[in-house]
Length: 331
Image 1 (cartoon, rainbow, N blue to C red):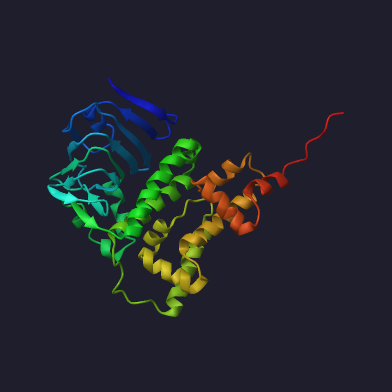
Image 2 (cartoon, rainbow, N blue to C red; image 1 turned 120 degrees about the vertical axis):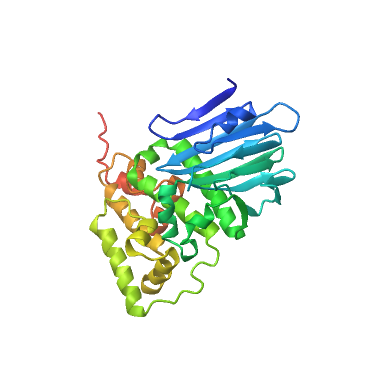
């Protein structure tokens, strides 16, 4: 066995980092992809995989230093996509030339085939079939998710959406590696999963709601009112933009422009502000800043600290320390 787990979180946190010295062993690392690899170029193989499962939403980074023929098939109805970070040479997806500025969709009963160049890296996201209604509820252009998962293909996505996907996968994996406790929190997992769903919407729903009619002023206010009531009813629940869209029966973009018209901020910014205020109160009694942040759903601690300081004009540690009893000096 020449595969080595470089770093793994405790058993109840589904994160691991692998270094593989055999292509076929690496093929077995990704959960649910049912794939096989064949090495096509000469030389000693070395590949790496970092993977994270967040309540059925799966993200990974995969790299290899040799040309590979990759074949596999996702579970029926599952959605799997990948965005390349680096391709040092010619690549083909299901027989067609592909490039850095494309999105690769791996779904479909017929399976997929990816001929990757030597020295390549991809960022991937997979979503279980049971979560596809959550995705389609947020975008008018994704109402028929069956079309998305019918066959493997490449798609053109906006460069900003491709970069967003790359950055999200890298950030999630870094956060899980550096602070495994993040994934013990229902709030943190829910916010991370919502970020994954939002990224998929941006990748797949180009031109979403372009023909939809805007709601009347009172209807927008009523929609935002219902959303705020839903958030306030159970502040301890991990409410996300995805769950709001599902509960209210509107797309992500509709919710977005209603919040901007009524409150001047996005629903994501509103939820973040509510959670930042929750953290500020929690810091009075929490055992640590990390505990308070994680319990209120912040999985990217560096971004949390920056957002907190921008909101309140001080670091979270300043708030935390202000509520600690003064240390007694011994004589």
